[in-house]
Length: 275
Image 1 (tube, helix red, strand yellow):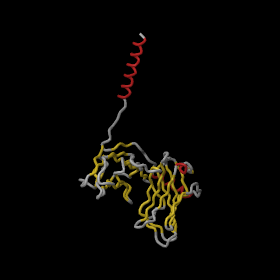
Image 2 (image 1 turned 90 degrees about the horizontal axis):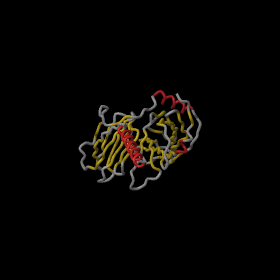
Image 3 (image 1 turned 135 degrees about the vertical axis):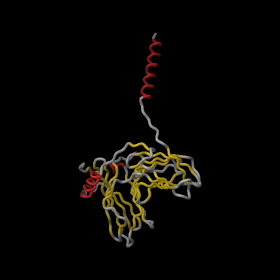
Image 4 (image 1 turned 30 degrees about the horizontal axis):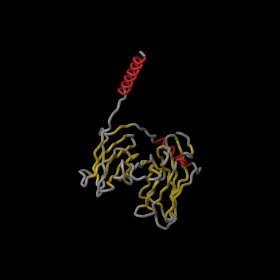
């Protein structure tokens, strides 16, 4: 009798489990085939700005195009590699999934993703323009310095002196100082989350962060002058073994600068009044 009751109980539990599983609704995201090669750069144009990029392995090189935050440049890092995935999340919260494979002569090297294409899953919202504008103004009026992270090269220095938090907006105050007689032309300034150490033979995960906006943007800093930028980016904390990398590259030059922001710096963020 006891064995019979136990068997009935297990049977009931199995039916409950089936019912729960059947009650979960799932939707597959369409995977887009992507052929890439070493000698040509493939450009993928998205309808909204790119927020994060995840590469399945080191066979793929990917970066946003300088000056265009909705264009991803993709190239093969080697003559052949195992087929892998590439995942992109854009500013409207849509996730795009690509299955990348090596091809000596890709059929298409310029791809446009239209808004009407049903290839992604939307789930994220971001602060509105008024909130971002107000947060930038507050950060510009705040002279408090809570962190000091700097990097120098050939008489130029990039420094972050303030990190602020306003609701869902993280603000970074950066100053570029050019102590040389040669103008510093800016090619790009990029934010990304990456591993502190880059292990071999593992999936490479580098998440590019597209700022909401930048206050006091510029394309160059003149000789013996300095310029302060304030970037508004999505709020975050940084996982263990990762860091926030801020990379500044000089156009037609070698004075490249990089700041490594760790989670302990983020946790020192000075709160601003929420709009």
